[in-house]
Length: 385
Image 1 (spheres, rainbow, N blue to C red):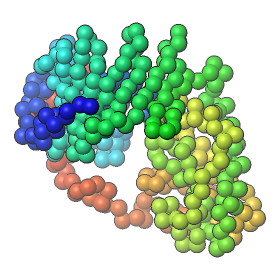
Image 2 (image 1 turned 180 degrees about the vertical axis):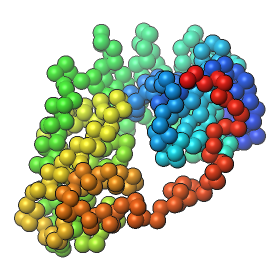
Image 3 (image 1 turned 60 degrees about the horizontal axis):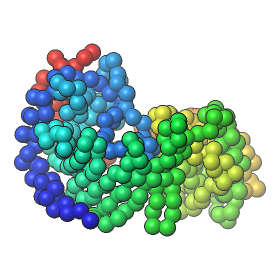
Image 4 (image 1 turned 135 degrees about the horizontal axis):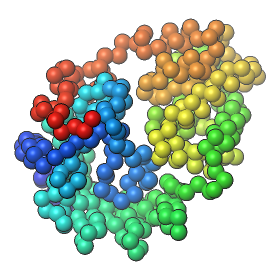
C-alpha cells in the first residue's frame, strides 16, 4: 500500500498555489501549438486502455464548435501548459493544466484546474532510470495510484489502486507487431479492452455486419418485454463516447425522453460480438465514433419500415430513432432516422429548439461571458498559426 496523505494535503492547497503554478508554467512556455485533443498523457497505455483517440497537432485553431487544446512547450520541447476549449461552449476555455518538471528526472507533477482556478486533480509521476514507475493521483473524489511493471522496454502490467486499495490489474501482451492485447482484471472477471484486429478485419464490412444484426435483433428484444400498452416510439439509446454500447428503450404513448422510459432491453449481438467489439474499439481509437452514431441511425431508419404490429401495440405516429442519453444529437438524428412524413411529432417533442435548456442548467453553475474567454495573458505571439 502507498501513503498518499501528503499528496492529498497538497491537493487541498492547490487553490492557493494556482497563481504561482500558472505563472511559472506560462513563463516556461516558449512556443504554442493547437491540438485536436489530449495527446501527452504520461501514464503508459492510457489511450488504449480507455479507448481514447490521441489528439493530433493542428496547423491552426479549429472551428469553435469542436473541442480542442492549445499546448505550450518549454525550451526542451516538453508540454508544460494545456488550455482546453469546449466545442459545446462555442470555443470557450474550460480547463487548464500545468506540468512541472522542476524535479526531473525523478518527478513530474501535473495540476489540473477548471477555468475558474478550482482544482480538479493533482498528479505526481515518479521515474527511475528514465522509466515511469508510479503515478499518484489526488482529487476531490479521493486518491489513488498505479505502478508499472516492465518486460524488457515495455510496460507489461499496471497495478491500479483506488483509495489505497487494490482496484484492477491491467495486463498487456506484445508480439513482433507491438501491442497485441490489453485486458483489465477485476475481482472475478477479465475485460478485454484492446485487441489488435486480424489482417482480414475491415471497418466497412464490420459496419455492414453489425448493422444487419442490429436490425434483426431489435424487434425480438422489444417483443420479449411483453408490452401491452400502445407505444409511440422505440429508441436505440447510446452514450456519445461509445455509440455501439446500445440499449433499446420503448416509449409508451406520451413518453419521448429515453431517460424517462421504464421499458428497456439489451440487444443480443452475440452473433457478431467480436466484430462489434473490434469495430467500437477501432472507431474510438481513430476518433471516428461518428460512424457508430451513423450506424444506429441507419438501423433506426430501416426499422421504421418494419411491420411492428406483430411486435407490440403501437400508436398511429409510432417511430424508431437513435438518441444519446444527453439529447445532444436530437436535431441531426431525427431527420436521419425518421421518414419525413412522420417527423413532425418526434421533432416537436424532442427538438432542442423546443426545449428550454439554458447554459446554466446544463452546467453546475451559470457562466458569465467574461469567465469563459481565452486566458487574460496575451498568448497570441506564442501561437504557431
